[in-house]
Image (cartoon, rainbow, N blue to C red; front, side):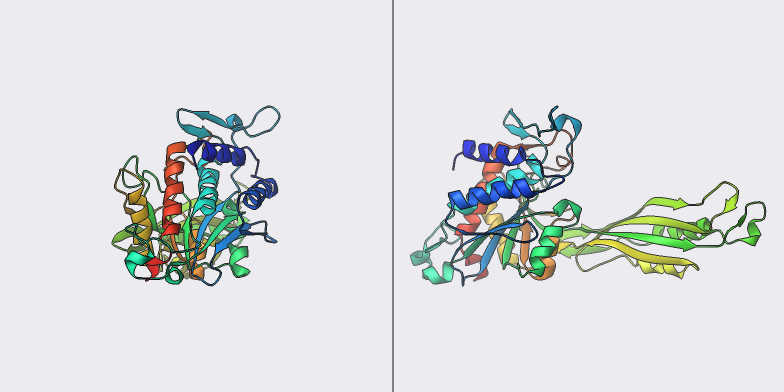
Length: 387
C-alpha cells in the first residue's frame, strides 16, 4: 500500500453522500472488499458491512468504523448537491474525511494487507519459531466492520451486536491523534458516555394575578435544577488515567402565556458518564411534582484487557517517531456498545480534536498512513497479546 492508494480510496469514500442514506457508501465499501480481498464479506439487514478472514476458530480482532456522516456544511457541497473533496497541503478536505471515512479506508487496506494466515510475529518482530510457539497459537480471525447510524446513537453497532457480533478484541478507528501531544497518534483506553435526560415538572394552572391559586411548574423545575447543580461529577480511574464526567442543564421550557401560571416545565440535562458510574439524577424526583426520564444512554468505554491495550500502544510506537500514550477521550463512540457487550476495545484513529463536524473538516494523509500501519501491525501480532 502506498499513500496514493490510501488517498484515492479515502477520496472515493468521502465523495459518496451518506448523511441521509448510507446505502451508496456501504455499496462502495462492500464492492471494494469483494474485489480486493478473498474475505467472507456480508451486508447485514441494518446496512453494516462486515468482512472476515483468517482462522475461523481463532480469537477475533475487529477493525471498526462507520460510514455515516453528519450533514455537510455549505462549503462541502457544490451547486449540484455533490460532496466537495479537495486535497491540499498533505490533507484531504471534505465531510467525513476525519469522522471517519479516512480511517475506514486505512482499516480496509490494513484488513486486506495484514498477514494473518500462518505464523504471526510477536511484539518484538520475531516469528513463531523464535517465540517457541506454533502457527495455531498465533493465529487470528481478522474482521473489518463499518457500521451505519453511529452519528444517531450507534444504531448499526447495536443492531450488529444484537445479531451476535461480539469480537474478542476491537480497534475502533475514531480520532486519537494529538491527544497527548502534537503530532502523535495515541491509544484511547477509556472514553466517556452520554446520558440525555429530561426532568418534567408538573403544576396547576391559575391566572397570574392570583398565583397562589395555582402550582407553578417553573418554580418546581428551578428547584430540580438546583438539585442537579449540587451533584458531584462522577470520576473513575482506568489504567492510571482519570476519567471525569460532567453534568449540565442545557434547555428549559415551560409556560404558555405571560398571564398564566404554568402547569408544566421541562428541563434537559446532558450528562457525560464514566465507566461504571452515573450521577444520581433520581434525586431530582425528591422535588414534589418532578419526574425524571432517560431519553438516551450512550455507554462509556474502558478497555477490559491491559495486554491488548499495551499491544496496540506498542504497535503505535513502532510506526511513528513520537511517543504515543494511553489517553482518554471525552465523548462516546461505538466502542462503548462493543465494550458493554464484552469486547476488549481501544480507540485509535487519525482525527484530531476539534476537526470532526466542522465546515472545514480534513484529515492528514500522513497520519492516515500511520493508522494503516498501526492497524496492520496489531493484526500481525496475532494473539500474542492474549497469551
